[in-house]
Length: 192
Image 1 (cartoon, one colour):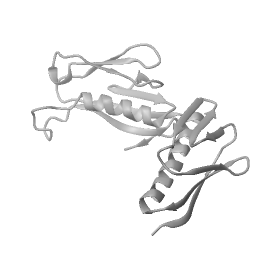
Image 2: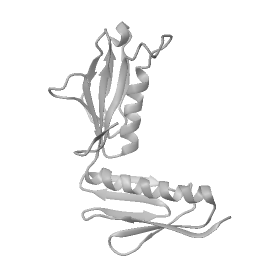
Image 3: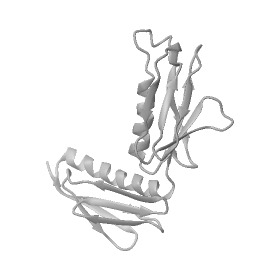
Image 4: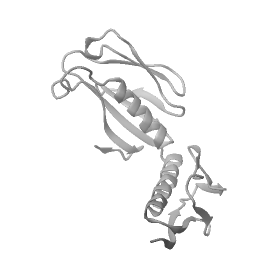
């Protein structure tokens, strides 16, 4: 059964501008600008007043209406990204061979992982554009990933995690690797 009209609203905080043209949403704030395309979903994105955007879906089925909530959550994450930014805290776990991580310079640096399980192979992972990586000062075996786009920051964390997966051993015993321990907006990260 199709629902005639489903709507959700997104509040826009002060200092942030949101514009949409033909289902391309652009959010601009103090930390920069993010753009996302919603052309794959049949939506109507309408500005209502100065501080609200309404997203409408006409005659949507159950699964299409589920996309409505997803699209508004993406817009809310873009707003948080251009105001606060996102931060992922990664921890290096090892039993015997200490994992050595070196981070290059630049906007999207190259991260080199050495001595994982005593292997001589150097794992090189390029951070995605707009993601900065840094080792924690004073906290051993900790790394921070920060950026405005939550998708790019989380994908960079996933690339680091997947580069250090244990192969051909019992993963219940060999727990070495790089794991996400906290994530969220900068200044309000929550442990996982």
